[in-house]
Amino acid sequence: MVLSVLVHVFSRRHEFEADRFAAETTGSGAPLVGALKKLAADNLSNLTPHPMDVFLHYSHPPVLQRIGALVRLSARSASPLR
Image 1 (cartoon, rainbow, N blue to C red):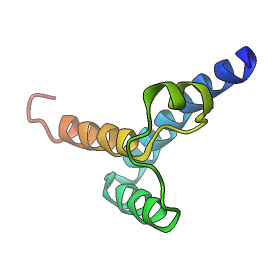
Image 2 (image 1 turned 90 degrees about the vertical axis):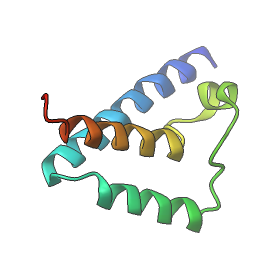
Image 3 (image 1 turned 135 degrees about the vertical axis):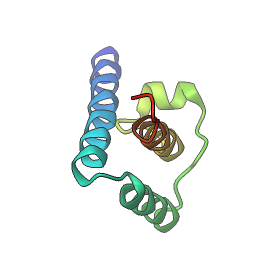
Image 4 (image 1 turned 120 degrees about the vertical axis):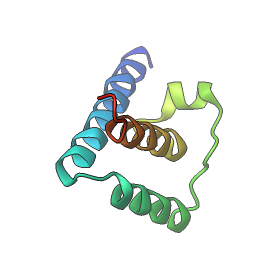
C-alpha cells in the first residue's frame, strides 16, 4: 500500500510534466483541454474526487486539476511581463 501511494505521487507529477510539455510543444494547451474534456465525458469521470481518494488510488491527476494547470500555464505564457 505504501509503495503504491509513492508510485502514484510520482506518476501524477510526471503526468503534469507531460501536459506542460505537450502544451509548450504545440504552442497551446487548448487541444489537450478539449481532449481531456471529451475523455472525461466519454468515460463518465468523477470531476471532483475526494483528495484522500486521489492520494491513495489515482495514478493520474483528476481532470479538473489537469485543466486548471493547463489554463494557468497558458495564462503565464500569455503574460506580457514574461
